[in-house]
Image (cartoon, rainbow, N blue to C red; front, side, top):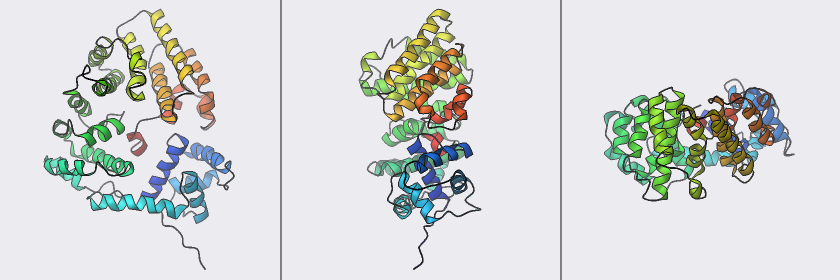
Amino acid sequence: MATVKPHFDQYALDNLKRKLSDRVGYVVANKPDCAKIAQIISGTGDGYISESTLYRIFFQNDKNSAYKSTLDLVCRYVGFKDSFDFLEDVNSTRSLLQHNGINPVDHSHESLLYHCILQGSFKPLDGFFESIQEQTHQFKMSVMVSLFDSLFKANNLIKFSQHFVRQKFVREYFFEIGHDPKFRIKHYDKGYQHYLKGVDKSRGIQDLQEYVFANAVLFRHYFLSSKLSKAISHGKRLYKEIKTLESYAHELHCFPYIRFMAYKLWYMQLTQANQTLRKHYGNSLLDYCEKNKSAAEPYAQRMLFHTVAEVLIHSDLPETYHFRLKKIYRKEFQKFPDYVATKHLKYSLPYFEPNGMLHFRP
């Protein structure tokens, strides 16, 4: 009897690549990545897969079709029984998205989300966002990506964020989990200004977390885009109005806490703090990495390295700090293609990238 072959279209392959990226801890982007991951999968003893096979599956699928046994192997590695089990999970989310007027296959398709946002018809979206609160995380992540695409095309973020400034799904999935460090949506910074409205850092831990989070992402954006007066303004909100977060270390999410700690080095640089003090603070950041990296969850480990590495790259501290950071994370570098450890620190950033939207829209 002939073996039934699973049908993996582009949507299914995109999801499989994301699952694989989640498993290895970095986005699968090129041939060296495929070579390293093929080595890792083959090393599990579950079966052999080559670099070229992985590359064809994810980057040349229009020319080649993978064997069921190969797809089974990759699907088992990312946590499924086989390729059919994976497709059942993927297609259930796909069906639910289509039922809600979202086409997850053709990104150029203008969904109902897009038309509501374009026309400023936000009342239907009030009900929609409330209705999906009990849906799976995977479904909400897919809606998040569609929302990002729609806002990118519709160019109506200011009115959208004004209306949904306190809506739970929008705050949690669009602004927080789906944060885009590239700020590709027009007026994206204005969205975070609206996010901050009504936030009182003295009211409780949730407000403090939101206050630090939004000011940190705005400070980073303005610093890296050389809008230094705006960067200093948000830096003052962080480092003049809040002296330390040490007593909240176990209550705050790693995203705002680690960024608060690391970005202080940039703020010291902007305000022309003494060079000796800046070097001392740089060493204290590396001490913190060394002390906390093994105890942190994998996500927090990536966040810690990526944030500190980015800060060091864009600081005026010498490259000896780069080398020490690499040494602290030498075991993590073994999971990456060999060239990553030997090149400038900036080449390691994509392998530690923790931000949600870059996993969907690199």
